[in-house]
Image 1 (tube, rainbow, N blue to C red):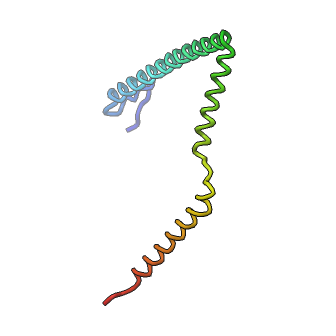
Image 2: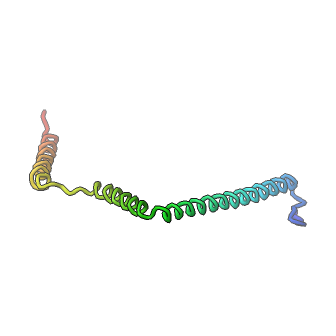
Image 3: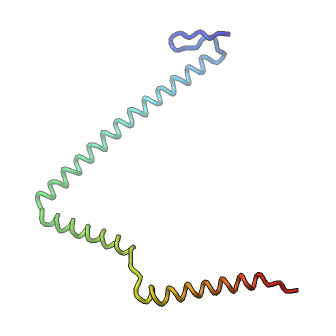
Length: 120
């Protein structure tokens, strides 16, 4: 049974009409999605342009306040970044840290020694 294809329609298959309807609905849905995406992008572009213009006008009207505000925001971001990278103190580095590590090693060694002993 050879399918005969005319005008993008397959005539000889049993479900040709349903297949064509599904294809048409899918095509229409894709086109609708494309149109929605284009209109959404246009709306976002328009809003972002308005925000940029408003921001530029505010900076032109109050340049000193804008610079001071930007400096404070930069300082806050810098503080938050450096806060996560705190250096260990002298006590942590040379007293508490090694003692804690040694204590953990001794505990692990005693635990494995105790587990390896067999009591009858």
